Image 1 (spheres, helix red, strand yellow):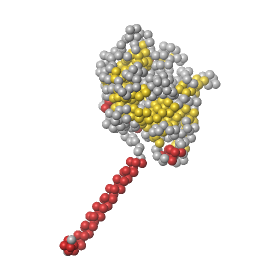
Image 2 (image 1 turned 180 degrees about the horizontal axis):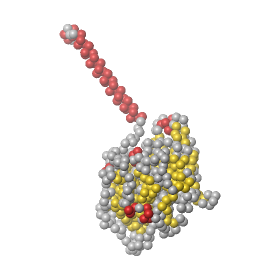
Image 3 (image 1 turned 30 degrees about the vertical axis):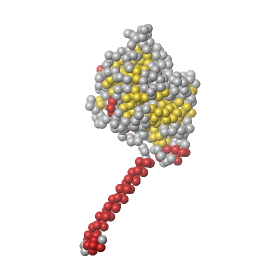
Image 4 (image 1 turned 180 degrees about the vertical axis):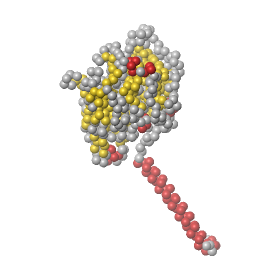
Length: 626
């Protein structure tokens, strides 16, 4: 050691300065690394907010060019169907209109700034009932929590379409809303389930626990459609009335009501009995959407509404308001339509939720027509015959390679087929060019014509696949004629194999046909079909005795693997491999499910009717996807 000291003494002072500088630098770097790691750990622990960039489920880039315009084919000319329209702006009849502030919707992933599901189908393309990605390990559904709800007369639980909203409110908004104090004290984002039900209440629940986040709003009216949250993150809730009530003039009246989610009070409404309508029946089953501060809503009275909201939200002051003006409404006429809902005639009315691509709105109606309307002029651009009543919402799918976007529609079965036994007709599924109205392909399947309480064919909105199933579009049928050609898959996870018989193998041919029974009729039940987007060929199909009103919900993991979750009217929620239709798991939640679920990451929420199934009363149920 002494020798080493003598050698250092003989070294130049400059050497010491260099060594000290190097050592100091190393110490500083080590301290910075430790600080960054500590900060990163704290960030991960305190801000578990899901990403808004969801590669497996987002519409692929690039976007379509700005100059794509409607150039309809001759077969979609409105005059071929006797179509004309009338227009009222701010209460005055007019023959022409140009919106002073142009209305334009963005792409699907641009619709909402709030994490979650803020309208039916998640956005203006109506193409997703799920937010985020799932982590799937053992491919099971497990009950997370349940909430008992009630009835209003004969209307119990939640109905069709009945999809809940699930939104994650930022801390600043939580602080000023009328949520319970414990959620404010947490000083964290709140992921809230908002569920208008048919028992006349709007329920507010914590997604993780099912605990009430605030007191229900008692509206005293039947709400069976899907509501809407202002996608800008404004605490405004828009709720449509599903069943009208008689007004003083003995006419059926229904309203669209607007609630402040700061005070919990109703702050606006419009509707009532609209004398502009060509139909006496008034209701709002569809779900509205919002762009450029403008609400777009289709009524079951056959009117398409838009209204400038002039909405204001000041989080610092804790205030939210709207001052609607510019109420614009358009109605249509068409050959064969009846103003008094005669049997055998076409009916006015929009029960589907209006979809939109930029300034073009798309919707089907009770009369079996699909319309494209320019929202900036309210002019009908084209009309497509979809054969029969259609309550299923139109789903939009961009295709940059084809320089267009496509519409997927499905029809109910209300009309008997000339070549079929009594009580049976055809349900049609179609792919349509959104810019021209040309039908790319169409398929049909035999279904029961149903009755006043049950609809045959398709009432569920299809799912247009992404990720692993980007080549598929999936439809779910009600009261479909069964082919008997599927192999039933039974597992230990299936509570009732007889009631929930899924297909183990894939149907890959269009030659599969329904089988007549000994009486010359057909057995009926639920049917799910996955078509090839390009050709319409059947890739797989499954059948069971319970049928479907709920829309097929597809969730995706981080790699784009797809899982189909389908609720049925026997009370089961079943999980499938969406690429081949193989059943993975099924759970009985107690009674008929007419509503479409919403999913936030790994948690699914849906309501039940409290009728049928294994006999449980009406509930809101949360399941964990695992």
